[in-house]
Amino acid sequence: MAELDYRSLVHRCFRCGFCKLTHDYSPVGFNCPMYHRFRLETYSPGGLNWLIRAALLTKSIEWTDHLSEILYSCTMCGNCAEACRFEFGKDMVNMFRQAREDVVETQLGLPKMVSQFLENVYLYGNAFREAREARGDWAAGLPVKQFADGDEYLYYVGCVGSYDSRSRKAARALASLLLKASVSFGILGQEEECDGNEVRLLGEQGLFERQRDRNIEKFKELGVKKIVTLSPHSYNTLKNDYSGEFEVLHYTQLLRDLIRAGTLPVPQRAVGKVTYHDPCFLGRHNGEYDAPREILDSIPGIDLVEMERSRNTAFCCGGGGANFYTGISAKGKEQASNARVWDAVNTGANVLAVACPVCLMTLEDAVKSEGIDDRIIVRDISEILADNK
Ligand code: SF4
Ligand code: SF4
Image (cartoon, rainbow, N blue to C red):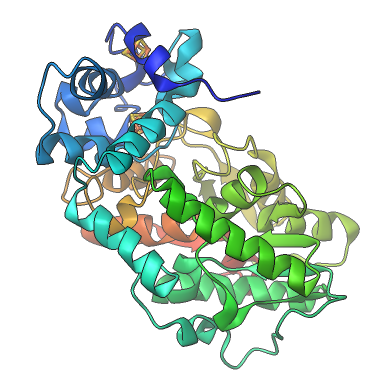
């Protein structure tokens, strides 16, 4: 079904404000990570709708750098789309993305860090301005080979897993599990490029299409048929915004299947009480809530407990929509990740399990900045399975 244009929808928001609150209006916090961070109505989903309408459609207010920053502080988490009681509400993330596309096309002006993110992808093929040649360095010392025709899966790592030092550990843990289960797979190494998920969400459709087309060409040239991703962000765009010619799995879906088939043994050591944080781009955006939980449940030494906000009402870590890089919403004591780690601590869990390299970065930083690293540790599910720590 064709996407509805935000211009025909945005006026339907009458700014009731329900969508910034939790689904049951409990005092646990707010739904919207940017509102949580800034506590101003303009930084709420309804406020953003009204700003978009006034600045881009009726032009009753002038576009400013500050408005641009508000538009880009949204993490595209989709929590407001779950909460809005109106039909148009389900299109909220697309509405914000389309408004960003208009801002890019009409050259109204982007926040500096957003422009830098896009420039990095354009020039270097990654968000971090790192050398293309270093993209496969995360696999150093592992018997991981370059993808070749005949391999069953392409293991697509993504920018964060390839370059961020903390997330590289999860990338390595997943590779070791695939090797252990004798999965036929290869990587692209220095030939891998940004998948474009965040580029698209930032409204740079032209650059997104360039990334998509280059990747599709590469995948076809190599004979790729199935792709397993480390990141839910890659999973989201490869599955939904590419050509549909490839079967795309998030790694938790593949590991769940391997555990079910008995080809991947689960650790037998005690892990303790574990709670799982649903990444927005695996859960809300793609409806996968069960595979990560089934994996954790299959480990005998884990007592899995749920946070009050979980599954489709899970609170975002604050890093989506490239905020892990731009830091517009993801900075300061009031950022979403700092609240999210307390959601986890309040369950009594000693491990906060994640299934996303962005959540891994943001939540581990939050645990450190809140000074609670003696109470809870953050582990990717790949790491829990690989080393049982
Ligand atoms: S998006 Fe929906 S819930 Fe949110 S303020 Fe607008 S009408 Fe209310
Ligand atoms: S998508 Fe998330 S961050 Fe953006 S307005 Fe909605 S709830 Fe807030």
